[in-house]
Image 1 (cartoon, helix red, strand yellow):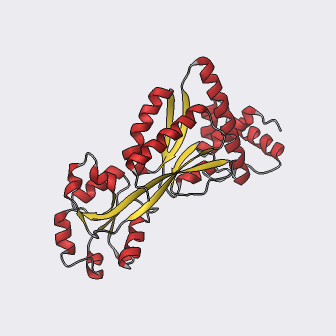
Image 2: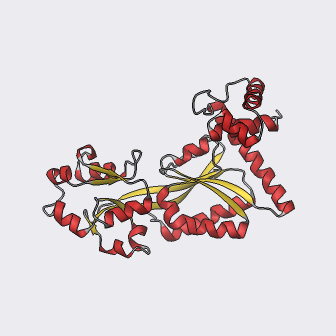
Image 3: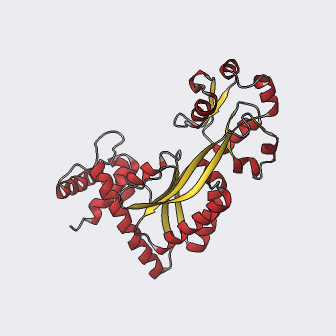
Length: 295
């Protein structure tokens, strides 16, 4: 079946922006025209493609169609760019810790050499794959091992996290160990309300419930690291943070020596992809070998 390009563009714009009004501004048409194009596309598909909620979201049928459309458009763009020697755009989802450390340098190098324009969206590693399922990105670094339909997942290695604190903080709260009483007093650092890493560690290694801990939420990878160094609280840091250019990390105290949590990462991408993206995937795999833990 041949899909109408204007109708597909309207669906993609509405799904990305969350409203017909913003989609109309992006496409330089009226909201009514956006609505008409999406309705015509739904009639052709024989299914509801976009929920009319606020913000509007693609349905399962809509997500499948968007994945197909973005793949077709990316291949077309790649051909056009090769003929015209222009830059290609890559929409990519990555977890915060990877982007802030090992991933960004290789992306910068690839963008320069491959003439890529990057559209990076950040999410917790458990949720980046969902952005691919929604058709919003074309590749993702995710902790999910199973790819969505039409995609492949390549193992990269693991981020190895340890429970760390500043020396003064450890002396103040944990001089007698990580007892239940100490855990009820010591402020715990958590990235955001989707972050289960600290809770998983406490449950697995200390048989403790993170719900009893007073908690600071610090939704920035670098700020989270700084918060541990400054003694604002204790939390999970991964090995590369502790060994990188952050000299403060070398003075932090491991609260549970020898115990850690490994978060496996996978590179998700379409089975059919332009040569530039294949080369990017190879770069990612090579960098991961240098920076991530391998079992």
